[in-house]
Length: 190
Image (cartoon, rainbow, N blue to C red):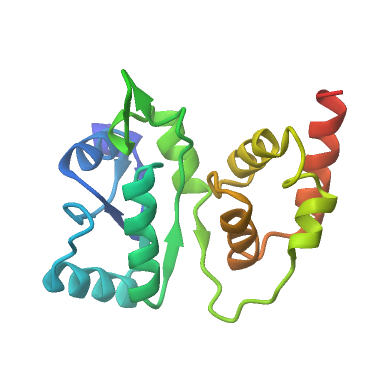
């Protein structure tokens, strides 16, 4: 049995920021990877990513920081077709004060890729700001902690209230999953 046979195979092409991200992912996953080299995306890189989205599909897997979110947002606005999003938490991507996919464990990488969410182009509004308030995801002392825990559970990453609302709707997360998690979270944190 070769080492490759022990790795998870991903048919989609994974889009990352840098070579260190690619090297870390390739330890655990057998997949093609496109590197953006930061958020100054070249036209040729954009064309490669769009071609990948049109053929095999892409998984955008950027760092859980400001620059990573900016690149993710930029790609999401440009690239259409079969696009999924994979997220790790800041904690999963932090080592010695450095944040990035290159620091994530194999378990965090595999979990993020298995939990990757497809974007919905015809987005139905499932949640409103009022829902976030009623669920305690905004406006309460522990709202940030709840969003962090729920974002990790749903594999949609952390975001402020506005970002979190957009992700819940963009990925069409079922209300039952959210309600069940919030109930369990509150039972465990009383």
